[in-house]
Image (cartoon, rainbow, N blue to C red; front, side, top):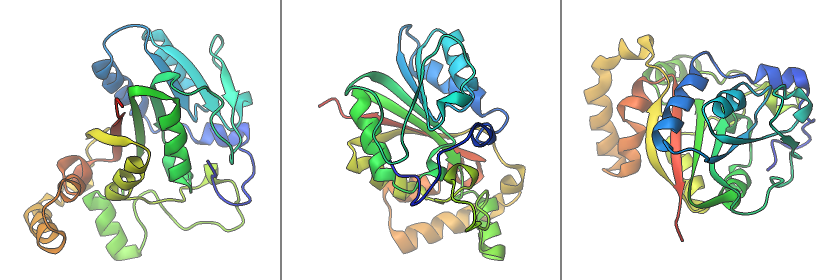
Length: 247
């Protein structure tokens, strides 16, 4: 689960800096509660940081475990936070969880195949992964890339900063995530966003042209439709729910 070659272990300050944007935890908790209305669901909060989301999940009745590169940053009493090496696997047995959460994590990871493979391993058959990441497919991001060469929330990388927790290093599109997830036996079952961007909505007049161009140049497929869905075109963050095969 390499973050990047030569990376240093995350410090408490870095973990704090990885805290989710306002409203993200509330949105994730709402979706999780919809998907799992029953009590006693086993949840792993991966990249838990200081534990804000872990606390909310526990208070909502979920059985929560936490994991982070630096478990010393975790501040929630009564929940175990295990450490994980950047280049190692998750410290849990196979089929341990019904749900794994990776909130604002995947944009800091270079090797997604290893990450999703480990997540799939610790999920039970039919278990789910929910992850959030900055949305580079929004109309705001597409316009920003056109004008500056940089996607929304992905600026210039500082070569002197080796810790990937301090920078967004992987601007993946949805079809790349679909491909990586599929390699690990996971398939997307739900796509939404945490918040609509006003700046993207103002560019909505481009929507017919974008969808027409996408179909003409890439063909009609679920991937093309998802990349140009309302959540992708207007959302601030992508919230992706993927399901592990029952087999």
